[in-house]
Amino acid sequence: MNIRERLSQLPSVDECLKSSHAQNWLETFYRKTVIRSIREVIDSRRKEILNGASPDPSIDTIAGDIEKAIRQYSAYKLRPLINATGVVIHTNLGRSILSNRAIENVAATAGSYSNLEYEIPKGKRGKRYSHIKDIIKELTGAEDAIVVNNNAAAVLICLDTFAKGKEVIVSRGELVEIGGSFRIPDVMKSSGAILREVGATNKTHLPDYENAVCGNTGLLLKVHQSNYKVIGFTEEVPIEKLVKLGREFRIPVMDDLGSGCLINLEKFGIYGEPTVQEVTGQGADIVTFSGDKLLGGPQAGIIVGREK
Image (cartoon, rainbow, N blue to C red; front, side, top):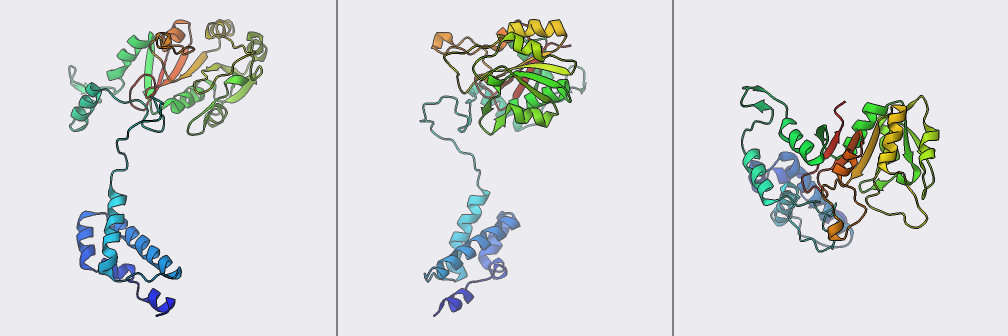
């Protein structure tokens, strides 16, 4: 039997759908998933034949492979893993692990109706942020707080709100890129803000910021170098000096902390991680950070700062 004859014996998608096997699949799985799986298996058999193999083309024979493909497409893709990388908060492996208490509360609430946007004492519609706003304010010392999808979104929202069409002054050494191709220049461009980089890669001084201030300056931005370090002949401007400069020119100052540390890590041998409380205490108008890194929560971007 030649290749053309063997190919002609392969069942069509329609023939597979009319088989007794397909009736069982269609009762359980989404029709498009079934059709996709049938096509995939038939295509696989076709390639085998073209490569010189002689697979059994009968529907009864390929039904097992079709069902396996259907179940793979329909299965939950997320699964628990053992993290043996040596990186405790691994951004590719789920980031921070939720505490048992948090997991229990999520399971109890997610499987039921809840007071997400309802004030029980007042018996009326409420705001979803009310559940976490006061806690974050207490933890960080900030006047106000809001939670968004992730820190990239937090940065984008702040830039769009305070500096759309205006210049944002940032040190050249802080134009970072983190995982997922999050780049400060790209986020700034998406927000409509105008990037005004100052200083050199390894050294930026306060006069660099001061000399860049103009009538169209919307924001002074500081970005924490969370995934790399420039060492040696270096210098950066501390946030308190940027805040003083911002007050002088009546320009808001924003600090993107990234990982969002809430406790002093020096006792654990980790240095150079400023806490959110320190930065808000030093007068930053806006501070953004992640909820799923050092904070130990779910994926989130948190914006804290002055109320007005």
